Length: 131
Image (cartoon, rainbow, N blue to C red):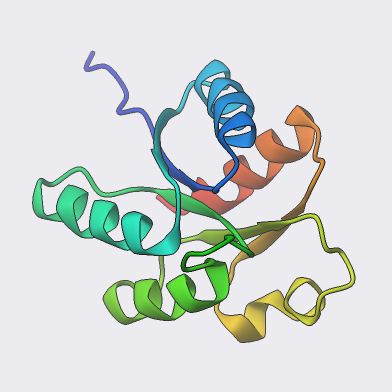
């Protein structure tokens, strides 16, 4: 029996503490994780991994990035490259229009910070069960 391929997650957040904590959670849940600090880095990493045949199964993007490209801009670029890839918006602003209407912005789901590990697990499982 062959070993099952681990699902790959890309996490984009400008807060190093959040990247550390959430990447530890995602690794603990059994997924491979890569990190980006802003949307531009996430897009470049997405393109690079796709060329290498190591595409991501899910991207989690912070909505607002201080001094850099946030999730709203980055999702538009990702959707030009892959219209079906599950992309989750992550934010502490639960009253933002993007949170209420995430699908109309191109996102597949929402994680409102702070979120619990079981919320993260459930969302990742729901969005990566497309195989």
